[in-house]
Length: 280
Image (cartoon, rainbow, N blue to C red; front, side, top):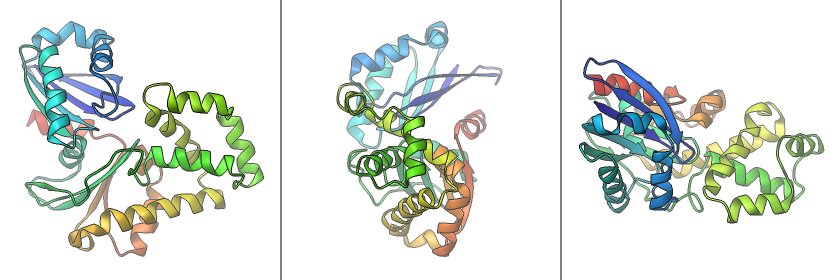
């Protein structure tokens, strides 16, 4: 049995592929080794009855995840998974490879971007993945991702920069008590996931001129600091994975068109493409 895992910081999608190529999907909390300690990673695995039922039958695990962009983190998570799935061969790759395999036909070149809880951008030359940016994590990087939008909304609200009607709607949609916010940011695990939850506010208010401005500013920053780092960007498709990209794809198309860039495939999740890739 193969296990395919596509893990963000918030949520992980799992696919069990049986020997007859039948599949079973399930989900767990995200397994980001950059932000979770070993005990919490193990607890999240143990919390899944689906995993517990099949862990001894698994002979291959292919894990694509946030926080797996360095060799140190790949090896760290691989050791944890090897301890858990004792009879399996473990492969750990950064989440960008999941996006590449899901969006890009074999042998083709593309710029592949992730806009989910975090953000990422890479050039795929048809065989290998190339990155210009070494991410410093969600506190510094992740332009145009859920963490950045959540942070931006909280700042705009507390600095009294939101139009009155948007501030009212934001306060009705989110708990804005400062003690609650600080507790989630500084006391609880996964503050990045908390901020990404707040970012969902922009989906339901994206037609307001103020929210449009915030979206445009962030997407412009992502294009400048990430996509345009690659000279190939103007001549090959640019694919996107992630909820931010999926729900804001019309806005993405407008920004890319301004820079004479060609948008390619836009998927909310790469998992279905990964099933096809690994079955073949």
